[in-house]
Amino acid sequence: MAQDDQAVLEVTARTRIRRFPPRGHHDKRTIWGILDKAVVAHIGFTKDETPAMLPMIFFRRGDHVYFHGAQKNRMFGSFTDHPQVCLTATVIDGFVAARAALHHSMNYRSVIIYGTVEEVADPVEKLDALKSLIERFYPNRWDKIRRPSESEFSRVSVYRLPIQEASAKIRNAFPPPMPEEMDINVWAGVVPIETRIGVPILDPHSNPDTALNQDFSRIAEILRPSDGANQPGPPKAVKLGDELLGDVRQEYVPPAEEPVPPAQAQAAPSAKPRQVERPAMPHPAAEAKTVATAFILADGSRQDVDAKVGLTLMEAATAAGVPGVVAECGGSMACATCHVYVDPEWLGRLPPPAAGESGMLDYVEGGRREGSRLSCQIKVTDDMEGFRAAVPEGQR
Ligand code: FES
Image (cartoon, rainbow, N blue to C red; front, side):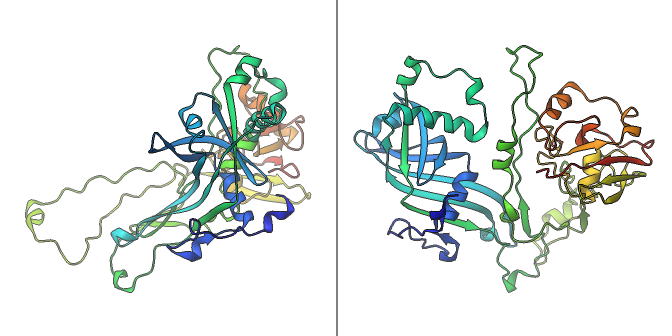
Protein backbone atom coordinates (compact mmCIF):
# COMPACT_ATOMS: atom_id res chain seq x y z
CA MET A 1 0.00 0.00 0.00
CA ALA A 2 1.11 3.56 -0.59
CA GLN A 3 2.45 5.63 2.27
CA ASP A 4 -0.72 7.72 2.64
CA ASP A 5 -2.72 4.64 3.63
CA GLN A 6 -2.28 5.86 7.22
CA ALA A 7 -4.58 8.81 6.54
CA VAL A 8 -8.02 8.88 8.12
CA LEU A 9 -11.00 9.95 6.03
CA GLU A 10 -13.30 12.67 7.22
CA VAL A 11 -16.36 11.25 8.94
CA THR A 12 -19.57 12.57 7.40
CA ALA A 13 -23.21 12.19 8.36
CA ARG A 14 -23.38 9.31 5.90
CA THR A 15 -20.26 7.50 7.04
CA ARG A 16 -20.62 7.88 10.80
CA ILE A 17 -21.07 4.42 12.35
CA ARG A 18 -24.05 4.62 14.66
CA ARG A 19 -24.66 0.99 15.50
CA PHE A 20 -21.68 -0.42 17.45
CA PRO A 21 -19.29 2.49 16.75
CA PRO A 22 -16.22 0.52 17.93
CA ARG A 23 -16.68 -1.66 14.86
CA GLY A 24 -16.31 1.35 12.58
CA HIS A 25 -13.11 2.40 10.83
CA HIS A 26 -12.32 5.37 8.64
CA ASP A 27 -8.60 4.91 8.07
CA LYS A 28 -7.50 4.22 4.53
CA ARG A 29 -5.42 1.20 5.51
CA THR A 30 -8.47 -0.67 6.78
CA ILE A 31 -10.75 0.47 3.96
CA TRP A 32 -8.22 -0.30 1.23
CA GLY A 33 -7.38 -3.66 2.81
CA ILE A 34 -11.01 -4.77 2.73
CA LEU A 35 -11.50 -3.56 -0.84
CA ASP A 36 -8.42 -5.51 -1.88
CA LYS A 37 -9.89 -8.68 -0.34
CA ALA A 38 -13.36 -8.33 -1.83
CA VAL A 39 -14.02 -9.65 -5.31
CA VAL A 40 -17.45 -8.19 -6.04
CA ALA A 41 -18.85 -4.78 -5.13
CA HIS A 42 -22.55 -3.93 -5.22
CA ILE A 43 -23.25 -0.52 -6.65
CA GLY A 44 -26.50 1.20 -5.79
CA PHE A 45 -27.75 3.79 -8.26
CA THR A 46 -30.95 5.56 -9.26
CA LYS A 47 -32.61 4.72 -12.56
CA ASP A 48 -35.93 6.27 -13.58
CA GLU A 49 -36.33 7.53 -10.01
CA THR A 50 -36.10 3.95 -8.76
CA PRO A 51 -33.30 2.61 -6.60
CA ALA A 52 -31.40 -0.30 -8.15
CA MET A 53 -28.23 -2.20 -7.52
CA LEU A 54 -25.78 -4.22 -9.61
CA PRO A 55 -22.91 -6.49 -8.59
CA MET A 56 -19.67 -5.54 -10.32
CA ILE A 57 -16.18 -6.95 -10.37
CA PHE A 58 -13.73 -4.18 -9.57
CA PHE A 59 -10.24 -3.21 -8.54
CA ARG A 60 -8.78 -0.49 -6.37
CA ARG A 61 -5.91 1.71 -7.34
CA GLY A 62 -4.84 4.29 -4.79
CA ASP A 63 -7.81 6.44 -3.85
CA HIS A 64 -10.17 5.09 -6.51
CA VAL A 65 -12.26 2.02 -7.23
CA TYR A 66 -12.57 1.10 -10.94
CA PHE A 67 -15.26 -0.96 -12.63
CA HIS A 68 -16.30 -1.51 -16.21
CA GLY A 69 -19.12 -2.82 -18.37
CA ALA A 70 -20.98 -2.48 -21.61
CA GLN A 71 -21.54 1.14 -22.50
CA LYS A 72 -25.28 0.46 -22.85
CA ASN A 73 -25.43 -0.96 -19.33
CA ARG A 74 -28.52 0.56 -17.69
CA MET A 75 -26.50 1.63 -14.66
CA PHE A 76 -24.04 3.54 -16.83
CA GLY A 77 -27.00 5.10 -18.63
CA SER A 78 -28.29 6.38 -15.30
CA PHE A 79 -25.03 8.17 -14.54
CA THR A 80 -25.87 11.00 -16.95
CA ASP A 81 -28.62 12.22 -14.62
CA HIS A 82 -27.60 10.55 -11.38
CA PRO A 83 -23.82 10.09 -11.06
CA GLN A 84 -24.10 9.65 -7.29
CA VAL A 85 -23.74 6.05 -6.17
CA CYS A 86 -23.29 3.97 -3.06
CA LEU A 87 -20.81 1.12 -3.38
CA THR A 88 -20.56 -1.71 -0.85
CA ALA A 89 -18.05 -4.53 -0.67
CA THR A 90 -18.07 -7.31 1.92
CA VAL A 91 -15.85 -10.17 2.97
CA ILE A 92 -17.66 -12.68 5.16
CA ASP A 93 -15.53 -14.46 7.75
CA GLY A 94 -17.82 -16.57 9.89
CA PHE A 95 -21.26 -17.57 11.07
CA VAL A 96 -21.88 -16.60 14.68
CA ALA A 97 -24.16 -19.09 16.41
CA ALA A 98 -25.55 -17.74 19.67
CA ARG A 99 -27.65 -18.99 22.56
CA ALA A 100 -30.36 -16.43 21.77
CA ALA A 101 -32.19 -16.08 18.47
CA LEU A 102 -31.41 -12.42 17.99
CA HIS A 103 -27.74 -12.77 18.90
CA HIS A 104 -26.98 -14.89 15.85
CA SER A 105 -24.80 -12.87 13.53
CA MET A 106 -21.95 -12.93 11.04
CA ASN A 107 -18.33 -11.97 11.37
CA TYR A 108 -17.44 -9.80 8.41
CA ARG A 109 -15.44 -6.93 7.01
CA SER A 110 -17.34 -4.43 4.88
CA VAL A 111 -16.86 -1.06 3.21
CA ILE A 112 -19.37 1.51 2.06
CA ILE A 113 -18.38 4.33 -0.29
CA TYR A 114 -20.61 7.24 -1.25
CA GLY A 115 -19.57 9.41 -4.15
CA THR A 116 -19.86 10.63 -7.68
CA VAL A 117 -18.57 8.42 -10.46
CA GLU A 118 -16.56 9.72 -13.36
CA GLU A 119 -15.95 8.01 -16.66
CA VAL A 120 -12.38 7.18 -17.57
CA ALA A 121 -12.31 8.84 -20.98
CA ASP A 122 -8.62 8.87 -21.76
CA PRO A 123 -8.06 5.80 -23.99
CA VAL A 124 -4.63 5.03 -22.53
CA GLU A 125 -5.93 5.16 -18.98
CA LYS A 126 -9.02 3.18 -19.96
CA LEU A 127 -6.97 0.41 -21.56
CA ASP A 128 -4.69 0.37 -18.55
CA ALA A 129 -7.72 0.00 -16.26
CA LEU A 130 -8.97 -2.98 -18.29
CA LYS A 131 -5.54 -4.54 -18.04
CA SER A 132 -5.36 -3.89 -14.30
CA LEU A 133 -8.72 -5.54 -13.76
CA ILE A 134 -7.53 -8.73 -15.46
CA GLU A 135 -4.14 -8.66 -13.82
CA ARG A 136 -5.71 -8.19 -10.40
CA PHE A 137 -6.63 -11.86 -10.63
CA TYR A 138 -4.35 -13.27 -13.36
CA PRO A 139 -0.83 -11.84 -13.21
CA ASN A 140 1.06 -11.68 -16.52
CA ARG A 141 -1.98 -12.72 -18.54
CA TRP A 142 -2.55 -9.50 -20.44
CA ASP A 143 0.41 -10.05 -22.73
CA LYS A 144 -0.81 -13.55 -23.68
CA ILE A 145 -4.39 -12.73 -24.59
CA ARG A 146 -6.08 -10.90 -27.45
CA ARG A 147 -6.46 -7.17 -26.80
CA PRO A 148 -9.82 -5.47 -27.30
CA SER A 149 -10.49 -4.54 -30.92
CA GLU A 150 -11.28 -0.92 -31.72
CA SER A 151 -14.96 -1.75 -31.89
CA GLU A 152 -14.95 -3.72 -28.59
CA PHE A 153 -13.01 -0.94 -26.93
CA SER A 154 -15.54 1.67 -28.01
CA ARG A 155 -18.45 -0.40 -26.66
CA VAL A 156 -17.04 -0.76 -23.16
CA SER A 157 -16.98 1.93 -20.50
CA VAL A 158 -14.76 2.25 -17.46
CA TYR A 159 -15.78 4.30 -14.44
CA ARG A 160 -13.99 5.23 -11.27
CA LEU A 161 -15.28 6.22 -7.88
CA PRO A 162 -13.15 8.20 -5.43
CA ILE A 163 -12.65 6.61 -1.99
CA GLN A 164 -13.24 9.84 -0.11
CA GLU A 165 -16.49 9.48 1.74
CA ALA A 166 -16.18 5.95 3.01
CA SER A 167 -16.29 3.80 6.10
CA ALA A 168 -15.43 0.25 7.06
CA LYS A 169 -17.12 -1.96 9.61
CA ILE A 170 -15.66 -5.09 11.08
CA ARG A 171 -17.29 -7.68 13.32
CA ASN A 172 -14.89 -10.14 14.80
CA ALA A 173 -16.41 -11.58 17.94
CA PHE A 174 -18.14 -14.47 19.64
CA PRO A 175 -21.79 -14.10 20.56
CA PRO A 176 -22.34 -11.77 23.53
CA PRO A 177 -21.92 -13.63 26.85
CA MET A 178 -25.29 -12.87 28.44
CA PRO A 179 -25.39 -14.29 32.00
CA GLU A 180 -29.07 -15.21 31.72
CA GLU A 181 -28.31 -17.43 28.70
CA MET A 182 -25.40 -19.37 30.12
CA ASP A 183 -27.45 -22.36 31.21
CA ILE A 184 -28.92 -22.87 27.74
CA ASN A 185 -27.23 -26.05 26.69
CA VAL A 186 -26.66 -25.38 23.01
CA TRP A 187 -23.41 -25.01 21.12
CA ALA A 188 -22.45 -21.38 20.59
CA GLY A 189 -19.46 -19.99 18.78
CA VAL A 190 -18.09 -19.07 15.39
CA VAL A 191 -18.07 -21.24 12.29
CA PRO A 192 -15.28 -19.74 10.17
CA ILE A 193 -15.81 -19.34 6.45
CA GLU A 194 -12.98 -20.12 4.09
CA THR A 195 -13.27 -19.45 0.37
CA ARG A 196 -10.93 -21.39 -1.85
CA ILE A 197 -10.40 -21.87 -5.53
CA GLY A 198 -11.07 -25.33 -6.87
CA VAL A 199 -9.32 -27.45 -9.45
CA PRO A 200 -9.16 -25.49 -12.72
CA ILE A 201 -11.46 -26.96 -15.39
CA LEU A 202 -10.25 -26.72 -18.97
CA ASP A 203 -12.71 -25.05 -21.36
CA PRO A 204 -13.99 -27.95 -23.51
CA HIS A 205 -13.38 -25.84 -26.62
CA SER A 206 -9.67 -25.70 -25.84
CA ASN A 207 -7.09 -27.99 -27.31
CA PRO A 208 -7.02 -30.81 -24.71
CA ASP A 209 -3.22 -30.63 -24.64
CA THR A 210 -3.26 -27.01 -23.51
CA ALA A 211 -0.78 -26.65 -20.67
CA LEU A 212 -1.96 -25.15 -17.40
CA ASN A 213 0.27 -22.17 -18.01
CA GLN A 214 -1.50 -19.72 -15.75
CA ASP A 215 -0.58 -18.83 -12.21
CA PHE A 216 -3.70 -18.80 -10.00
CA SER A 217 -1.89 -17.89 -6.81
CA ARG A 218 -3.11 -14.28 -6.98
CA ILE A 219 -6.72 -15.46 -6.80
CA ALA A 220 -5.86 -17.82 -3.96
CA GLU A 221 -4.13 -14.95 -2.17
CA ILE A 222 -7.15 -12.67 -2.54
CA LEU A 223 -9.52 -15.36 -1.28
CA ARG A 224 -7.25 -16.52 1.53
CA PRO A 225 -8.52 -15.42 4.93
CA SER A 226 -6.13 -12.60 5.76
CA ASP A 227 -3.74 -12.56 8.65
CA GLY A 228 -5.65 -13.72 11.66
CA ALA A 229 -8.55 -14.57 9.34
CA ASN A 230 -10.66 -12.01 11.21
CA GLN A 231 -11.54 -14.74 13.67
CA PRO A 232 -12.13 -13.92 17.33
CA GLY A 233 -9.47 -16.33 18.58
CA PRO A 234 -6.90 -18.86 17.45
CA PRO A 235 -8.41 -21.88 15.68
CA LYS A 236 -9.48 -24.43 18.26
CA ALA A 237 -11.05 -27.81 18.22
CA VAL A 238 -14.78 -27.32 17.99
CA LYS A 239 -17.33 -28.84 20.32
CA LEU A 240 -20.56 -29.91 18.70
CA GLY A 241 -22.80 -31.23 21.44
CA ASP A 242 -20.53 -33.51 23.42
CA GLU A 243 -18.51 -34.68 20.43
CA LEU A 244 -15.10 -33.26 19.70
CA LEU A 245 -14.49 -32.57 16.02
CA GLY A 246 -10.77 -32.81 15.52
CA ASP A 247 -10.89 -31.78 11.89
CA VAL A 248 -13.70 -29.43 10.88
CA ARG A 249 -12.69 -29.55 7.23
CA GLN A 250 -14.24 -32.96 6.79
CA GLU A 251 -17.55 -33.27 5.07
CA TYR A 252 -20.35 -32.48 7.48
CA VAL A 253 -22.85 -35.27 7.96
CA PRO A 254 -26.05 -33.99 9.50
CA PRO A 255 -27.20 -35.96 12.52
CA ALA A 256 -30.09 -38.32 11.98
CA GLU A 257 -33.48 -37.10 13.13
CA GLU A 258 -34.25 -38.46 16.55
CA PRO A 259 -37.58 -40.26 16.70
CA VAL A 260 -39.74 -38.50 19.26
CA PRO A 261 -42.00 -40.80 21.30
CA PRO A 262 -45.64 -39.75 20.83
CA ALA A 263 -46.13 -39.07 24.54
CA GLN A 264 -43.12 -36.76 24.59
CA ALA A 265 -44.27 -35.08 21.39
CA GLN A 266 -47.52 -34.11 23.12
CA ALA A 267 -45.85 -32.92 26.31
CA ALA A 268 -45.57 -29.24 27.13
CA PRO A 269 -42.16 -27.81 26.21
CA SER A 270 -39.66 -28.34 28.98
CA ALA A 271 -38.00 -25.35 30.58
CA LYS A 272 -34.65 -27.11 30.21
CA PRO A 273 -33.44 -27.69 26.63
CA ARG A 274 -32.99 -31.36 25.84
CA GLN A 275 -29.44 -32.50 25.07
CA VAL A 276 -29.43 -34.09 21.60
CA GLU A 277 -27.01 -36.94 21.06
CA ARG A 278 -24.87 -36.37 17.97
CA PRO A 279 -23.22 -39.17 16.05
CA ALA A 280 -19.44 -39.16 16.23
CA MET A 281 -17.82 -37.95 13.02
CA PRO A 282 -14.29 -39.32 13.04
CA HIS A 283 -11.90 -38.23 10.33
CA PRO A 284 -11.53 -40.97 7.70
CA ALA A 285 -7.93 -41.45 8.78
CA ALA A 286 -8.54 -41.04 12.52
CA GLU A 287 -7.90 -44.70 13.35
CA ALA A 288 -5.46 -45.31 10.53
CA LYS A 289 -2.05 -46.85 10.90
CA THR A 290 0.85 -44.39 10.70
CA VAL A 291 4.19 -44.56 8.95
CA ALA A 292 7.31 -42.67 9.99
CA THR A 293 8.20 -39.99 7.46
CA ALA A 294 10.68 -37.13 7.61
CA PHE A 295 10.77 -33.64 6.13
CA ILE A 296 14.08 -31.85 5.65
CA LEU A 297 13.32 -28.19 6.26
CA ALA A 298 14.76 -25.20 4.43
CA ASP A 299 17.25 -24.55 7.26
CA GLY A 300 18.58 -28.11 6.98
CA SER A 301 16.88 -29.40 10.12
CA ARG A 302 14.68 -32.47 10.04
CA GLN A 303 11.10 -32.86 11.22
CA ASP A 304 9.78 -36.34 11.77
CA VAL A 305 6.10 -36.85 11.05
CA ASP A 306 3.99 -39.88 11.82
CA ALA A 307 1.82 -39.76 8.72
CA LYS A 308 -1.54 -41.46 8.79
CA VAL A 309 -2.10 -43.93 5.99
CA GLY A 310 -4.92 -42.67 3.78
CA LEU A 311 -4.16 -38.98 4.20
CA THR A 312 -2.19 -37.09 1.61
CA LEU A 313 1.39 -36.22 2.42
CA MET A 314 0.30 -32.55 2.46
CA GLU A 315 -2.39 -33.27 5.05
CA ALA A 316 0.10 -35.14 7.22
CA ALA A 317 2.62 -32.30 6.91
CA THR A 318 0.18 -29.48 7.63
CA ALA A 319 -1.35 -31.40 10.56
CA ALA A 320 2.16 -31.69 12.01
CA GLY A 321 2.91 -28.02 11.27
CA VAL A 322 5.80 -28.66 8.91
CA PRO A 323 7.04 -25.13 8.07
CA GLY A 324 7.00 -24.36 4.38
CA VAL A 325 4.18 -26.72 3.43
CA VAL A 326 1.55 -24.01 3.09
CA ALA A 327 -1.12 -25.75 0.97
CA GLU A 328 -2.94 -22.56 0.19
CA CYS A 329 -5.71 -24.23 -1.81
CA GLY A 330 -6.27 -27.07 0.65
CA GLY A 331 -5.38 -29.77 -1.85
CA SER A 332 -7.33 -28.54 -4.88
CA MET A 333 -4.13 -28.56 -6.93
CA ALA A 334 -4.47 -24.87 -7.61
CA CYS A 335 -1.72 -23.22 -5.58
CA ALA A 336 1.48 -25.30 -5.78
CA THR A 337 2.40 -24.20 -2.25
CA CYS A 338 2.62 -27.81 -1.04
CA HIS A 339 5.69 -28.40 -3.19
CA VAL A 340 8.32 -30.80 -1.84
CA TYR A 341 11.44 -32.43 -3.22
CA VAL A 342 11.05 -36.18 -2.80
CA ASP A 343 14.25 -37.96 -1.81
CA PRO A 344 15.78 -39.68 -4.89
CA GLU A 345 15.60 -43.02 -3.11
CA TRP A 346 11.81 -42.67 -2.91
CA LEU A 347 11.05 -41.00 -6.19
CA GLY A 348 10.75 -44.15 -8.27
CA ARG A 349 8.61 -45.83 -5.62
CA LEU A 350 5.78 -43.33 -5.96
CA PRO A 351 3.20 -43.31 -8.74
CA PRO A 352 4.36 -40.67 -11.25
CA PRO A 353 2.67 -37.24 -11.29
CA ALA A 354 -0.45 -36.92 -13.43
CA ALA A 355 -0.47 -34.37 -16.24
CA GLY A 356 -2.22 -31.72 -14.14
CA GLU A 357 0.32 -32.02 -11.34
CA SER A 358 3.17 -31.97 -13.78
CA GLY A 359 1.83 -28.75 -15.33
CA MET A 360 1.59 -27.09 -11.91
CA LEU A 361 5.15 -28.11 -11.05
CA ASP A 362 6.42 -25.70 -13.69
CA TYR A 363 5.27 -22.82 -11.45
CA VAL A 364 6.48 -23.90 -8.03
CA GLU A 365 8.41 -21.68 -5.66
CA GLY A 366 12.02 -22.71 -5.42
CA GLY A 367 12.00 -24.03 -8.98
CA ARG A 368 11.16 -27.45 -10.36
CA ARG A 369 13.88 -30.03 -9.87
CA GLU A 370 14.27 -33.75 -10.08
CA GLY A 371 12.04 -34.97 -7.25
CA SER A 372 9.59 -32.04 -7.34
CA ARG A 373 6.11 -33.15 -6.37
CA LEU A 374 2.94 -31.60 -5.00
CA SER A 375 2.54 -33.23 -1.62
CA CYS A 376 -1.25 -32.96 -1.89
CA GLN A 377 -1.10 -35.43 -4.76
CA ILE A 378 0.83 -38.09 -2.84
CA LYS A 379 -1.29 -40.52 -0.86
CA VAL A 380 0.37 -41.92 2.24
CA THR A 381 0.47 -45.70 1.93
CA ASP A 382 1.60 -48.31 4.43
CA ASP A 383 4.74 -49.06 2.43
CA MET A 384 6.05 -45.50 2.92
CA GLU A 385 7.82 -46.21 6.21
CA GLY A 386 11.01 -44.10 6.16
CA PHE A 387 9.82 -41.79 3.37
CA ARG A 388 11.75 -38.53 3.10
CA ALA A 389 11.20 -35.24 1.28
CA ALA A 390 12.73 -31.79 1.48
CA VAL A 391 10.75 -28.54 1.76
CA PRO A 392 11.78 -25.65 -0.50
CA GLU A 393 12.74 -22.29 0.92
CA GLY A 394 10.28 -19.40 0.94
CA GLN A 395 7.14 -21.18 -0.18
CA ARG A 396 3.97 -19.21 0.33
S1 FES B 1 -2.22 -27.87 -1.71
FE1 FES B 1 -2.46 -26.52 -3.38
S2 FES B 1 -1.54 -27.60 -4.98
FE2 FES B 1 -1.25 -28.86 -3.29
